[in-house]
Image 1: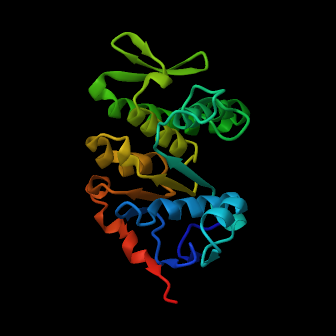
Image 2: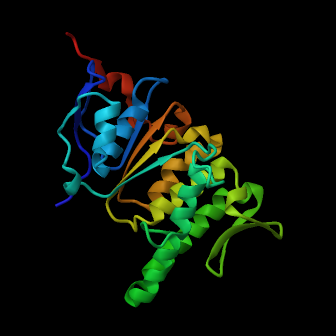
Length: 259
């Protein structure tokens, strides 16, 4: 049996703090807090714990004692998306980490699920053709609606994904950071195939226009209605469109440990 996250207790953070978060929602959770309040740290710990990165857990956060959470093998699949479109630290690659992630999500057929891998499932599971195609059509419709203000339309031809803007071809790498970020989020949600899963997003407002910030939760939930979202943010716009009751303040979860 697999589980969503429901309760988290992390003790020994930097040897002087603990995090206690009970009653985590199964649909949407929006972690709000100032810089340095521990939002991104919490996501990093969750990702490291559920991907088995014991070295990162041991070297970066102190002597942690993690309890209250399902074991990694008992948890629904988890994916973490970060926003920063910075130059790649790998001098052999000109693509930023965000662009590399987007390319993997679109094209990679080896490391994990990808858009073109999902399309190919129609060949392996012809009985699912209608279901898969309808889900992809919703993805196209959602992307085109979001990108309508700049007259961009998504296109897929000959195993290539690109955009068309007033007759001009726009490659994925030529999109803005916010456009790449939104596209990556939607493809990630699409590839969850409406199955239970956990999606972590770290400060998406850094890249997104205000109008996209307000729509973010809704469009992700449209693509992946059974996904548990945990989003960190500084921006009230992320939860302004009816999600205010899902906001959790990091300062209330992070407690200093008295000696």
